[in-house]
Length: 250
Ligand code: BTN
Picture (cartoon, rainbow, N blue to C red):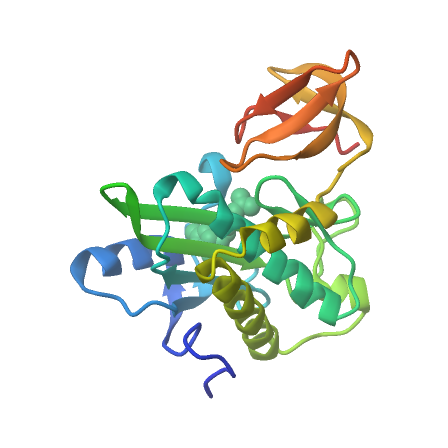
């Protein structure tokens, strides 16, 4: 595989035909050795791909991108949500380059209308208060023909065209690198501004579930530690942590 046009993201690629999970592989690797920042672990097939909150990530072998990136950002753990933000933005911009309009469903999903095209599982190791290694697992649906009743979609289903996985991967690497440099230069305001522009449900009155109870409110943003801010009908602003609420996508 030729190197992507980046300075460090994806300059080292470990290409596996079969693995349990690229995040697991990356976690073992960073324990054993010093991994160069920007290294990507890419799998044709994962036998135990993992999603958020203990879910499984299922993807047809060779049809989609399933990989993990190891980064070593100079970032305190309390600011770790910025990593999720830049990865989401890079995915959104990759899709924009393919003329696909997508939104970020807080905190880590990329949606087209109400269907998921990509998901992110970030697992950080810490050294004191600092992030040591950030393992960023990305599942990006490229060529899979999900059925009409599925809640997933792919680039192929959105454009009607099959895509070479490598070219999508390299495009994504470039986008990640550009946002990573903004992060390194502490251009947090640019990241926050871009994130809110593509945040699913921002400024819209919608229904959510908390402990299976439905409530309605309006997303007004995300705070610096990644909590979702929803304004209720009474005008009260509530903060929600990851997994605390579910979106009503029906
Ligand atoms: C989610 O939306 O729930 C997150 C999905 C993350 C899936 C990717 S695929 C590559 C990497 N390895 C894993 O086991 N999971 C992530």
